[in-house]
Image (cartoon, rainbow, N blue to C red; front, side, top):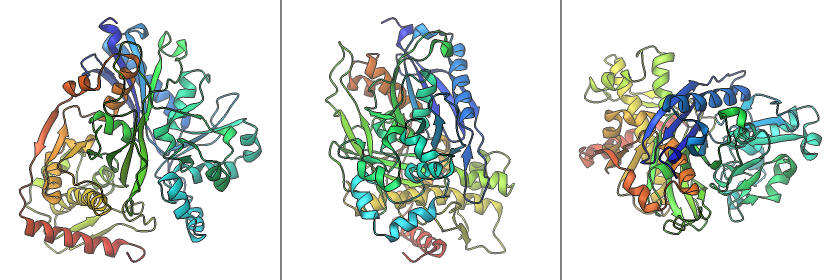
Length: 511
């Protein structure tokens, strides 16, 4: 393999943007491109995106990244795709035309249906099969809603004329000229339709939600091969070697390959994942079980994938609002001009002055799962300033992560010695110091900020032989910065108690 052919193109389709990053044989990002993606809010609790815009912005980013790197398609060993999870798209099998706006993971339109199923006593059964809770966050009720509202939706889906999938399946379909209709196990495990044990669609779950198997993509291993790109997209065919959900990609990008290793991604929301090993884990109260990845044998000449195991499950906690709270300070209140300004403003005061902000804009996620909760700000006095609110916002992000770690450990997960951090907001030094203080443990920031794209690239490159050993990956990935806790335990306990009281006031129903 030539040096040029050792490059891997990562397509990173996120909630707020579509980006592409080219990584070289040393796993260094050498070029990138990014385009914003719009969301619309047609009704209270609804969040939608244009599926065609998702595709156009992702393709454009990929082309621009390759051009910026001075590479042609022949210089790229493989493409790895990572994507926003749970967001659901319906499209026509023959024409490839989207049949409705994409329903974004944040959308809450199916909350009543989830509540009705919960009232029927079905949640424990769903949880035992899928590792998930009955919540509109996941794809199954989104798919059911689409079938109920599209003309002849159920009949067309049963006939295979209508396709349903998450963003990864949509991109694979478009990239391959509709020659491949497939998803990977990590994304499929977020739909509430996959049986975690068999790693295939559950007939019982499909019946429960009325989703025909004929409308769904084939479930493949994460690096199971997803076809070749249509030559018209990049000038020549490129293998799509790996597909992985964004949070699982970040887990791999942080090389949390061993059971008990965990990372937290600070993005629009917060997503904490801990690798558990090759057996289906029993999720602690309020947390989820998911598939991290399933890897197959790599190409000839590469070492077998046996050091970290071909199959890994994970426990996950999802916080709905993290970086979105900072954007609210900017767009909703106008107290900062740019999201990066929050660090300086928050650092201008020694603490939040007693202010506690619980940013439950779209309900509370893990470990509370209260879709009807709404945000609260407590402890406001005449002396409260915008700086105190900015500080409380960063503290809110950190407190929510501590809630996830506590739920993991109370539920029997191994004690975390260190938390690995990535995502856009992890560049905020004050946030990570606050996180270390409230968690009482070190926090390590990734050397490569874009660990989601890196994880997709590593999985794809490892599959096609760019990297021959998992140990080789460890030699390439380092730690960017380490934050040690300095807050006294007594103060930490007091801060956590104030947070718990504020959360109790926020919740729509008693704990």
